[in-house]
Image (cartoon, rainbow, N blue to C red; front, side, top):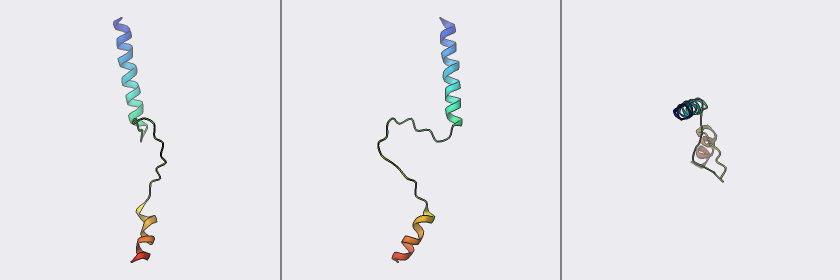
Length: 51
């Protein structure tokens, strides 16, 4: 029984290590919106033209 527990702890630690090395991982659940990151360089000409 203790071997199963130790195996689970090792597996969980390995999974957390791999996920931390994976980059931007969102564990927040399902998202139904599309988010497009906008850079400041792309919006700079539009704001300069309005002045």
